[in-house]
Length: 470
Ligand code: UGA
Image 1 (cartoon, protein in one colour):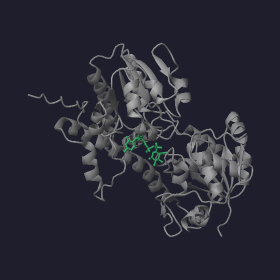
Image 2 (cartoon, helix red, strand yellow):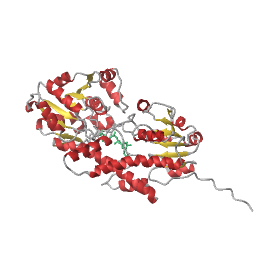
Image 3 (cartoon, helix red, strand yellow):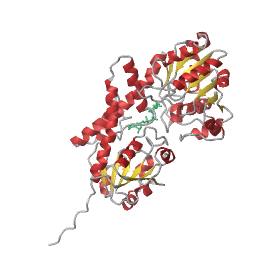
């Protein structure tokens, strides 16, 4: 039976809140700290703040009995053996990660240290952050024997964050001291021993008692780099396939076939080879920029990352040109838009390519009716309704009388639309799909002009004229 450990998680964003709920699910006692009183009050009152599968049920299960919420970091520090820092590391003007929140937490923790603590970086941070946290704590007069700083990066994806946390491909622990490594190993032991997966109420996923996740012990610096390098590599994979999709369009090939053929090579793998309108979200754009900036500061030439970013920005512009190519001119055109979130399954619109493209289309003089199953509320905050922009209640309302329908986000429900109904709802049966959710041939048979990414445009199949009898 694994030991229950008292943990503080600082920051109740995607990473912090999911980590807090999952640590409780693993049998630990968790204090979730946030300096935003409204957030803490909302969490105490049963709100989950973010749209994430399994999170409502886990918080309902452990709220007040396994997870508590507070604004009091000092007390949480005194009571906890391990303090996970999961606060934001936003991008600064130069592309660097802004670490002021991490520093503020480290200093507050330092002021409250009473006995040995392990302080864990869970936020995505550049290499050397660990050393800075150590220095900041030592400056408060705390002896090195009283604490260790460990890097334990998180690889969860929004939308599947809880399952990713409890069924990880790997757990990375960067620790330079055995004492700290032991505590982290104990925290994750319900997963690494497979004990958790024996429970009948365990959240389902890919790991099992027979195949538990591995825990990789590294130096702190290696762990910090593993996180940035992993995200940058995944972004690179996406930019690569997007560049290939452009080549396919020009050469008359089909990028979906190319991606399938590449992905069957086990050294390449099929995942993150989906072409589209470019990657977005709160992680990839920020982390690629931060990693590039780290390389620059260390005097290392990593121009590949600049190219990854360039291709990503270019991909949105190419898609705008594609919309234009379908409609001849854009000014005054009415477009139904499906998708505001940066990907399907989330209400997050941070760095969403959909939002960027809507702004570009509005600047071109289009009228837009947009729908998203979860992200409308957040989109309204940054793009209020106006004479040229309205939000629709469903996909068909967005399509009503539109000159074309544009798909920006890969929600499952957008891949299963009633095409006959859609054809009757649109003013012209034109669909421009930035996520390749449909087969071009099938769309042609349904009577649509269908443009997608990295594949030839398909046109409505006409019924053959009746044979003329002689
Ligand atoms: C990403 C990583 O996948 C996680 O491992 C990591 O923990 C997380 O960042 C983080 O650093 O916190 P996330 O941002 O939630 O997770 O989203 P992804 O599913 O990775 O998608 C990122 C973007 O790439 C989305 O805009 C998505 O539409 C796009 N994408 C993804 C593609 O265009 N093609 C693909 O094949 C895959």
